[in-house]
Image (cartoon, rainbow, N blue to C red; front, side, top):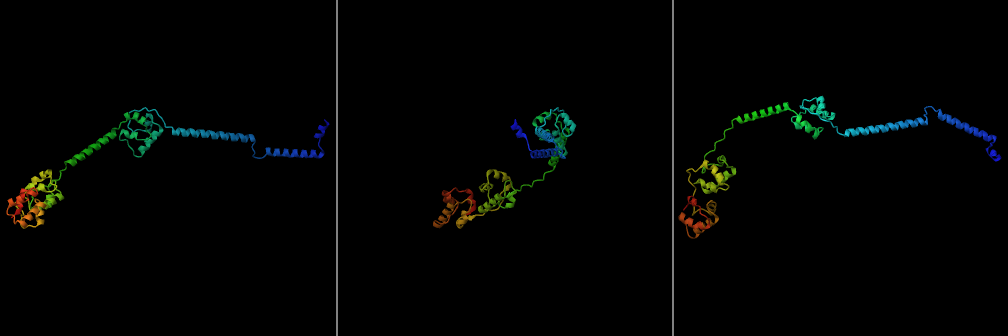
Length: 304
């Protein structure tokens, strides 16, 4: 007991120091409590807690708002017969369309859009296939239909007027003489173009003139159908054919004739050089028949 009392007893100097320290601590506590604008720890904690709760509530509301925007509006439709070009916003609402769908329709019409057919309503991105399936039987477009009929009627009248206009008269097809006609006139015949006309003229020059219409069949490219088409428009005049002297003509002249081939011309020259002149058609025909078919018309183009 004496030792405890001795432990707790302080000297005068120690007591003064302890009192001083306690006084300083007391003053510091008073300064913290009565500092201007200083809120208590409890008030600050409560304020921070209220702020956290408010932020959490705001985040929840924003999340719900985004979820609502991403979820398409679904409305129950109650359609009645209607013209989509004349319907008001209130009437669209009576049908059961959502505000978003109605805004889309109003914007489309404000930009000059019109519904010319039922399917035009289905083309709006806010109208689903299910909605259109319910609306389609009730869509009525009397004014647009009449307008389209009027346009069709006007178009038909224009076509009739165009058909009633007199067609320009066709230039008559000329009748030509194969021995005197030029290529410019030949192209006026049906199915005769510039190339075919030139072939006919070249064949006539090599031949020495036509004596029969059927000779046209020997022109390259002249088939039976083309010949049958132009036959009514051709004839053979009285012009004499150009004849080749079979005993004096050179090799080039003879070989270019359409009715003589290379081997036949060689035989003619061998005859002329080794055995003498060819005297008549019978001798010529017998001479060349072994080297190819002899065209009987050749007789009209040679002389002896």
